[in-house]
Image 1 (cartoon, rainbow, N blue to C red):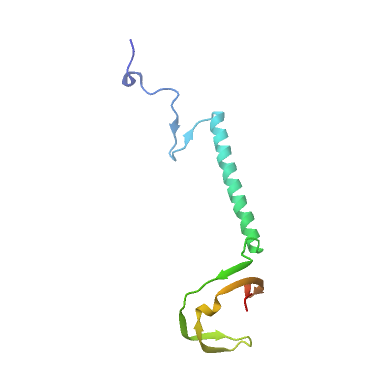
Image 2: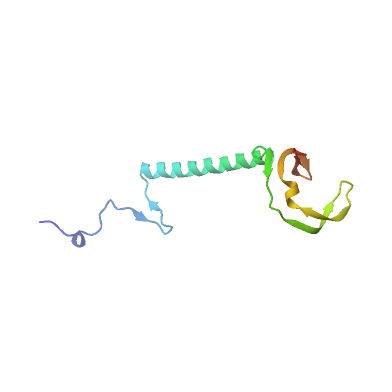
Length: 117
């Protein structure tokens, strides 16, 4: 005669859950899963750190940019001139359409110069 589940009680091979929801077990499969999980996390964080350090060196930055602006204007825009002074000018965005290439840095940011003109 077969017993029902209610009569037998819980199975002995069931895993208990800890208060944090993790499986509590000392089986080797559990250790392997934990190792793979932490190895995966270490690889992802290591790769993120590598890419971040290479970006600071300018490794993954665009060397050329193709800009295409709409026909809009900005009246009385303040423009900084080469000598450091500023003046008001009419800016027509479409005048800046073209291909720009990287040419060094200015105040820690990449500087792009226009190739078309």
